[in-house]
Length: 605
Image (tube, rainbow, N blue to C red; front, side):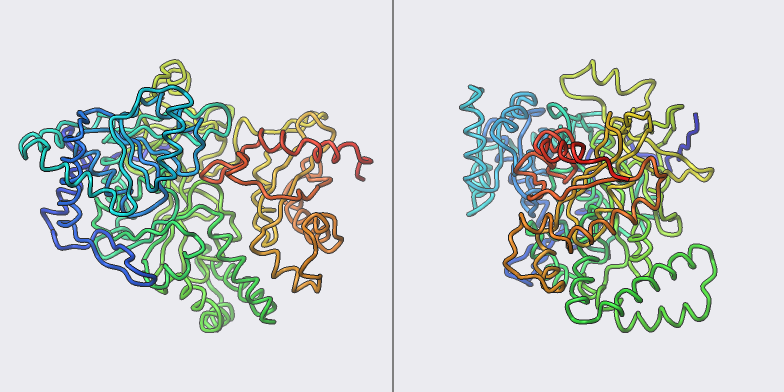
């Protein structure tokens, strides 16, 4: 087995918990803005460490006055917004445990989480969310909740008013300080690509110590008191949640936006210095810029600028940039790259990408235009990052090296094992699964990959998703899917062929890109979606995207046939998880007739 362990670089006292990170900010710089709230489009109002701290303590006392005891579980069901983090910290200050619930969850999903985690109270964004919770409790005949509060329409004022009846300062401070590094901070339920979601028990140490170890690495040069970011991925997801705690630990400023359609104007008004996103967001940024250039008759200039950015990034990685390439890069910097950076606020220099592979071409492109993207790797079970690239230590195509205090091992069958301060203490109510998945302190991730001699990790795919064709050929679908999905017209791609004579694919079209693309191709704007799935122009475009992907694999692994699905895969249909991961089994079931059509047609040459 090959392994790489990065020793811890800071010693964190055992009695530390997440709330101490905020206490330290209040002690060192009470007037430093930790957050900014959007009071009107384009208008942001800072929230200082002191003001945030005061409100957190008030809400914590309100929770205690409502009857919540130390160790009780409190659910949060809301899209990303400032109050999410506010309530999260209030729960911790009250000595309780936060249980995130995706705002898109159905009553049955909510019922499972509420019952399995023994949730005593909930804080929801809207009355609609609270209605889903009430329906879940009624349908499954669960115990009534102790309390429920809303974030909208000053709904948290009810909790603030209760604070006057809560425990005194000494009692509240005892609640705040009771938890130590090994104690439970939150139960985060996995997205559940298969089966019922499992609750990952993450500790105060998982968040607090991992944050401090992370900041002691080169990432501390990106996340610091003079840095800022806009949070737009779901705070119910472990990735955003960790960054939220990390930002408090660093004293960085965070804004929030839940409407991705408003992301560009929000970035332009907030002007962050770093971003965190899933690969699909970076794909969207690139594709929208490309479509805009094509629509304006500047497609050839954009294509040349793209290739120059990629070539420049690759030359930099090799340590030598030819003078001609340097001159071309400077020219496109004025014509093109600056405008793309301006669309993201003009100050962004670094971004962290997680949740899936970005792809080397896109990583080189963004690096070439002046936005260094550091890919990271982790799961809910590892509190998000176990490895990540960092300034001066980026190898495009890898997801970096282990964060201090963590390690990676590659098993004999290629499976990635992880251990360290990032690792959860176990699955809630599932000691059997915990014992199966964590062996001798190493968590079996289910992903496959490789380590190079310097400790950089490369992800190949999911162990359970390996396709074995009828001819016995092993195919990793992610290698093809990620490349095809990078095409501007493609929204989703799922490779099929398990037990079949050849590899094939289902593809969906991007509804946002499609109208502009149709216009550029000279097709009628009112062409029905059903007709587009078989239209020669569309089919030819997708075929070229597939041909590019096929060039990276052997003929036996290549996609021999494909179909375009009439509708996209969605969270609402259950085909995607809330973090946009593909539920392969659901897609194959829902689109079974289309899959069968692939294999009932004459065998492709």
